[in-house]
Length: 150
Image (cartoon, rainbow, N blue to C red):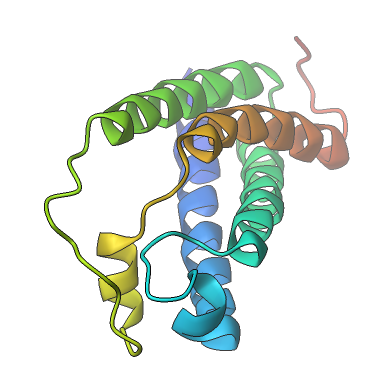
């Protein structure tokens, strides 16, 4: 059981690190003008599309690392449970966030200001856990067949 817990932790940490790294790189390439709609904290279409692709890529990496670490396919089920719980809780909490007078977006903002003020569409927030599940399954399949199967 310890290897499975280690695999879940390693897989989830991999996902978090990949999301941060990939989104930081994307921010450097696009900047505020490409990431947001004009004078708004709402994301641009390109940012939303990249969110989907990069989120899936991070989940694939997480699934791969989880199975490689635990060498047991049961880790996939547990990582999926963690991804679903955290993802759905985040989406529900986002639904109840108040837009407390953010106002218009200044032309120049830092990545951390963007992270704190961006307003992701609700449908994307609920799509993320689904992408997480699909990505974890894809990454686990890419890793191949460990010693113990589901």
